[in-house]
Length: 307
Image (cartoon, rainbow, N blue to C red; front, side, top):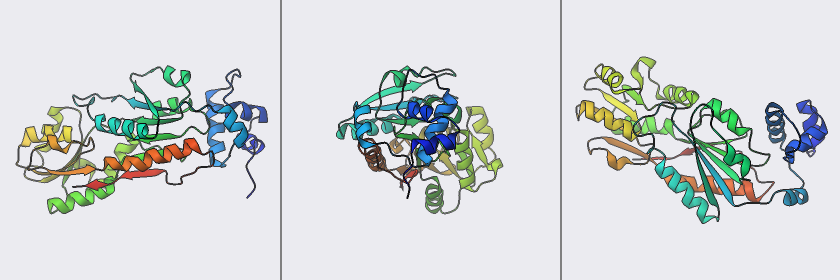
């Protein structure tokens, strides 16, 4: 197969060869719009462009730095600061085992600062809990060949790897453990509306049987419609709100997306996700960093469910 050149990319993007060269080589002195930059980088990925190895080795001075950007909840809850703690610890440990250092940043507000990204040459990036709008803003700062892994967001773009709990498998397992399919679903707030919609669709429940949590009053009103029914709750911190309201009257299964099933009472059915599944994820990122020709076609990675 004919090797893709910057001329091919320029033609597909409708820009000059020089512009493609400036973007792929991350030349800072040229004034190029973010829209053009993102367009060229996407086309380069889609055409499987591979840089010249000698030029790449001269241009890229690996820093050994992995960035983790945690997008704060758009609708904060009392447990918002806790729900990604174990994921962060796991990523830091696994990256450390491969010799990387972590640069951590929380993304907050409508107009966050991305100085950390601009000022440091990151070898790779994990984005946690990103909504579509802020993802589109931050993704333009990553140069060609910088691997980006997105956790807990449904980003359709095939360039980026996505890591999600195995919701489809979880719903099936929950029905087995409860002895019947759940009749209602209580969902934690999601920054990414597309992810929330996908989860609702996978549940197989009518929208009237799905509650997207906002406050205790709304939760109580919803639960009063499902007395003595089997239910499913996503996130163990939110599940404790359900237990406070209903006690042990309802038979519920909980998807422990924060990896902390121990905070739940014994009568609750608990389904957890393998933190060890992040090992191949980190290995894949390392492969992208170390080898210019490395490619993984598995863009959706699902954390396996256990009970």
